[in-house]
Length: 133
Image 1 (cartoon, rainbow, N blue to C red):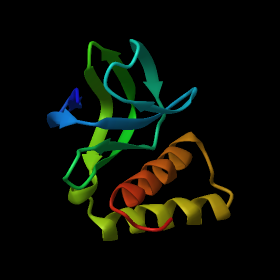
Image 2: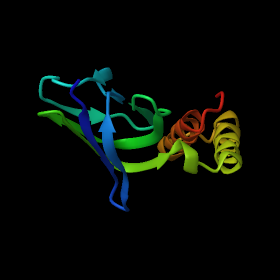
Image 3: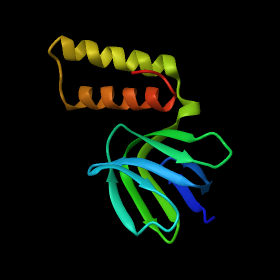
Image 4: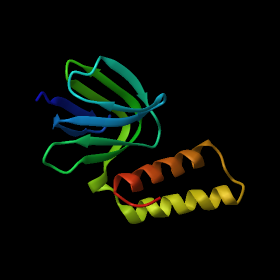
């Protein structure tokens, strides 16, 4: 069976590259699943989304992805993220702390775009690490 060639990059570094059976990402138009021979696609990734790369026989690769683009053509999937972090690299305690600080600010009536963004990013990091949110 055909495989996808997948690359996940952010401005700071290459997050991951390799072969996969399926890629699942959340775009502004909804969740998208990409399998081999998928039609060409260009999508905008949501802020605070979780990317899942299914690799047959291996555990799924899971990453918190904060904005960017997904491009699909000829079994090549490129994830160009504004920021991304593998679930295995997430500092769970720091992410929980960031979420609690953001929620406390929201409850205190200090909600603004930056606080909502911090909460979204913290939730995505926790989900990518396999934590309940």
